[in-house]
Length: 491
Image (cartoon, rainbow, N blue to C red; front, side, top):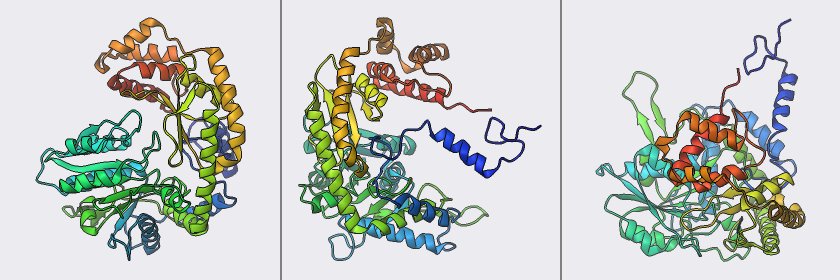
């Protein structure tokens, strides 16, 4: 008898729908929990009953609608314009403001929004053969990706090791005649601190350069926190000189992946973002974003989410999240040897260890073993290794549990001691160049760390320790090779 299921995605005979869904559920059982307040990265859970079902139903209604042609599917155009309007109004734009002509586009996520912000700035200056962008080192890595993809030079600006912000004077000094864009974060993802946006925008404007505020992470939380009385500094279109802002709706607007909004102060600034092509015999192509065909599902799901929660819902969720942040910060302060890398300003708790016997990477593994999934961050340019917690409203009911779990994990990490890699391996990591990595050497490193085809080790402390010991360029190459080992076809 033919095995209708087979071992891959394309069996000889089709598989019944119920069985396919069971297979997917079985695969999902190995994933991190997307709900329940124990995952501090990657997903955003408001803990609102019925919201998932609403978003899924809205997604299904528009899943097969194609965003390629807004004249064919006006429903999608209407929802996209509504999302842009909501984001613009929240971020200081629209009628009656100092930025009444704000326009925008819905993208697939923060990375696409940032790439498009760089593209618009680059293409607005066709006279420059070597355009450049100025980005604090705390700016999202997607700016480096944009620079790489678009062949734009990246001028990084250091951040103060205490404030974790760039000095405005350093930003001003980095601006050159070829600079097309200056970047500020509100807040930076790694540490959750807001850059001095008003001052950065002022020096950009004085140089005649665009200023983009990456509010992908905080754009849908900082306005609500401000309404709750938090001392949020100016960062949006109310700041003169801010020319564009990105905000992810699939973060704290709690829409499903992937929906972001890229806003420009006016249509003239947005125009270079578009791509149009008529020099071929096919359909007329004009794209506001990178993708041509786009499913309407994520846009409809975001629209339904915003409509259902409303301003009062988001204000309530922001208050719950604020209180959860305060509770988690207190839990960190209560553990000897740990300290906050920055006092929380938004929805991030970031901490490090001052005790050399307390290995942060081991601590992360110990927390994972106890059902708490955090995000380790490697040491960089004088900044210590740290642990990042993205805090959502769903975390609030779990805060009381986290403190004891953190203390227990820290005690276990101390008992286990820091990761000790063989001296020859550390020496190799410190001396190798990316070009010197051979397939055999990579295979040996991976095997020694427990990395295999399609499988990652249960504990990642040794991997992170090796990566931290490696110079940045070698670190990047190792990451590529290690993830490449995980991504192998199943036959």
